[in-house]
Each structure stands twice: as C-alpha cells, then as structure tokens.
Amino acid sequence: MVSEFELIRRFFTRVTPGAVLGVGDDAALVHIRHGMELAVSTDMLVGGTHFFPDADPFFLGHKALAVNLSDMAAMAAQSCWVTLALSLPEVDEMWLEKFSAGLFALADEHQVALIGGDTTRGPLNLCVTIMGEVPHGAALRRSGAQVGDDVWVSGVLGDAALALAHIQGHIQLAAKDFAACASALHQPMPRVALGLALRGVAHSAIDISDGLLADLGHILACSNVGAEIAFAALPISCTLRPYLGQPLVKHCVLAGGDDYELCFTVPVAYRPEVEKIASNLGLLMTRIGTITAEKKCIVRAADGSVINIEESGYDHFR
Image 1 (spheres, rainbow, N blue to C red):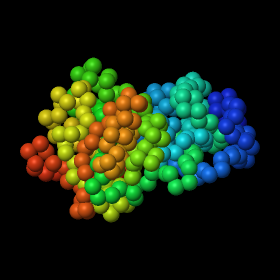
Image 2 (image 1 turned 120 degrees about the vertical axis):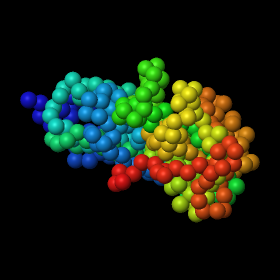
Image 3 (image 1 turned 180 degrees about the vertical axis):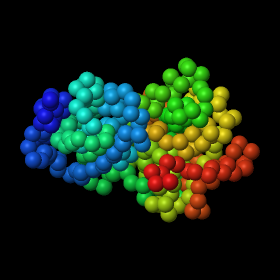
Image 4 (image 1 turned 30 degrees about the horizontal axis):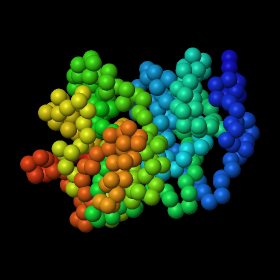
C-alpha cells in the first residue's frame, strides 16, 4: 500500500527552481520581486459537481490548473507557484500518474511550479491555490469599468456548456459537433498572454467561468455601472451556430459557463490597441457592447428587442 508521503514523492514532487523551498517541508518559501504585489486565488473542483466520476484524469489535471491560470490572467498577474490539496477515495496509481501528467504538462507550458499541498482520504476533490506577481497598481480589477467603455470578450462562447448539455442528455449533438465542443469543456485554454497584454489597456477584467452575464454582472456591480450587449455580436463557433434556434443553446452562450475566456472593458480610444493585441496573439477578440450609466445589463436581439434570460449563470447554491 502506497503511503501518503510516498504518493506525494512519486507523483507531485519535482525540482522547483522558481521557489526558495518547494515540496517537503512544513511550508514552501517564495521570493517576491521588488515592486511586485502577490496575487493569490483558489479554485476547488468537486467530483459529482464539477466533473463526472469517470472523467479522464489527464484532462482533470489540466483543468484543475487551467481554471486557476485563468483567474491570474483576469488580474493581469504572472502565474508563478501553485499548491494542490487532493482528496482521494483510494490510491489509484494509474489515475494519479495520468492526473499529474495533465497538471504538469500545463504547468510546464506556463512555467508554474507546484510547491506544496496536502493529500487525504475522502470523496474526490481537487483544490488548487495559485500565486502570481503583478507590478504595484497594475492588477486588473472588477471595479475599474467606466461609462462609455467598450465590452470585449476573447475566443468563442457556449461550446463548453453545449458539450455538458449533451452529456447530461438535454440536447443531442452530432458526433463530430460533440467532439469539437468537448475539448472546450475538458481542456480550456487559459488566456494567460492576453491578461498580461491588457495591463495598462483595460479598465477591468474577469474570466468567464460561471457564464457571460453572471461574470460581466460582477464587473457591473463592483464598478457601479450597467451594460448593453448585442447578442448578434457575440462570438459563436461554427459548431454551435446551427443549434442556435434552440432556447437552451442561447442560454449556453449567455449563461452556460465553463468558457474560461476573458471579458474586459476598454476605453473607446484603445480599440486599435486591442485589435493589435488580438493580431499579435492570433486570438479572436470581439467587441460585444458598451458600459452604460444605467445600472443593469441589457441584451438586445438584432431587431432591438430585449432578450430575457431567467438564469444569468451558474450558482452552487441554487
């Protein structure tokens, strides 16, 4: 039987040149560079709530880190270190090997070091805490949106939610369409480079984890403003578009969640700068609306009518 400490040594202990002290002591030690602030975020993925019990462990490892990298991107912070708290019903060495491979593949891509954590027996639960650096005063906050700002989003919206709806039996997708959408659900690509590029350009930002309307709503509430969004402007994939006539699909786009794209607000004068960033990164970025003084979010159809959405996004306690 593999012990807790052998499990940590075999699957999660690596050299961490970016930290003063990594895995193996009572606490990790990190050095924050002069002129930097420490950004910290924690996300928990719970089996049966955030993923199915038979989920591919490699994809889980990827997603457990990706959702945290996305939070750092939204703050315009450079990710540096993570800790992992892992609750396991039993020791499954093959599962752990694949899970750690998925996590470390993404960590290596973004030069992030795993520097500590905890393991225990219990229901499957993955909790990552990420730490990063951002220059003093340069972090993007939800509270910075200003009246007249353009509202932008990266990538496309709704594919991940559509894949989940298919898995749950709420909609039937063609096999090739499900395969195309499933990658967005299982392997979201955090917009790390975009977050860093938006320093000094965007007034505010947030990652779209709970749905566009819910997450944009956090910006509006924190900034004490409103927004008007054009549904026809929303970036929708060629895979999703043929299903758009179904009411559930419109909900996936506006409120489905799991997109892990960035929503951000930018002064009108900086439109050329955003377009330049999009070109440099080879990333689709779409202007979808405007920040308004009226403290509510309105989504308009192409004919100017208001689109009503009963639920604006995911809430764990509803």
